[in-house]
Image (cartoon, rainbow, N blue to C red; front, side, top):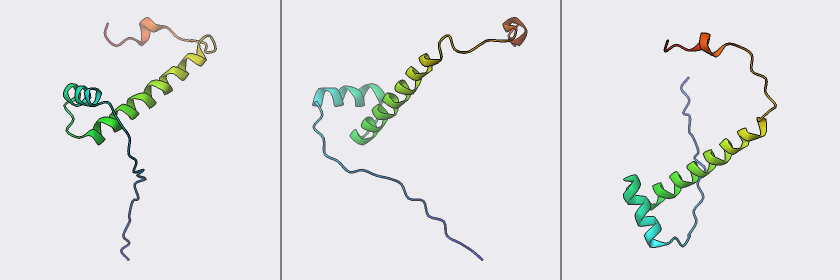
Length: 75
């Protein structure tokens, strides 16, 4: 029996006002072709940065066990 599988992509349509120079610079520097791509890349980068900031919460809370010199593969 064959079944068709469909994926649904969550999409939010919105209108926003963005500084023309800011958008132009973003497109030029990234090489992206569309404003949508630039906005999505910016959101992904922002999310990744915020996730990385959470790593700081572990400072001083993790215990290292092992010998770094033995683990290195570039000897």
